[in-house]
Image 1: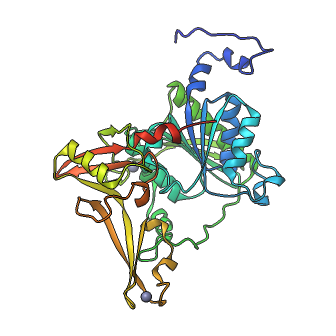
Image 2: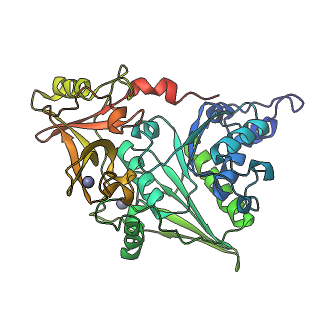
Length: 391
Ligand SMILES: [Zn+2]
Ligand SMILES: [Zn+2]
């Protein structure tokens, strides 16, 4: 490395000390955009570290609210935060720790409420999660857009840190066993509608294992940003009872479902989820691929519900994964309703005037357009400026 070491004035520069680290480039850190998914025990620690280091842009994603039991493991939360959204309190405290950091709080479900383009436009993703389902989602999204992500997991005094990087070694899904899939499928065990009422087994964690694992996660993210060597597809296992730390490598699964990359992505600077209609996007797809092109949503869209008893029909236009079992009950007669499902849009649909947001596509979505064997991936790039705006 020939980058000159710049030593600043310790009286006026909070990053002064970092200047003595040979490979550290504060400008690289300042320019970086990091997505932290999960603002629980691990997320708090990762956010704290990234803030202290002066990360330029932090996107904090979580769907949860703060309860008192979080306070024993969450350095950013206070007792007065009870009931607040975790992302809001975390964003506020990050800003307090370091006003240089630009922050955006995003409250939602990562499994289906964040556009894939968001993953494309960040530099690194740090997963601070407590469940397999969200890890699997992040893994698939990261592969789809070819971005590395850093996973962390804690239980009692144990911890795991893993870097997953598309095309370089095993991914998270490669590591899943049949039992893992069973646990993930529990959440979708109802024939059609997602179950929300299955409580996930609460795993006991400590602030110490959270800070140890999160520290390693932050360092891996920092190395990725600087282009330093990381070890994707391997796990660092930390046993805090015996103080053993060791690395283990996962085998790559040939038939792994996560190994799909979206290529090529076509950026559409004029397209926005809240303004562009389904028909508009279909016309763009056809301009790209010819008149037979169709849009493949990549999920089951429930366009409506029809009662099998009284015949009442009502429009829905939401992803199947978003609906609860109660949606299957007719509000009119209490009878059982049937879903009308759709995952491909070909041009003969009745809802072409709906906006993309009105068929449950979030801002910065990437939608596959297909004609025969040829595919392009259309990104709603027009959402980028407003969605990825940091304060
Ligand atoms: Zn894999
Ligand atoms: Zn009915």
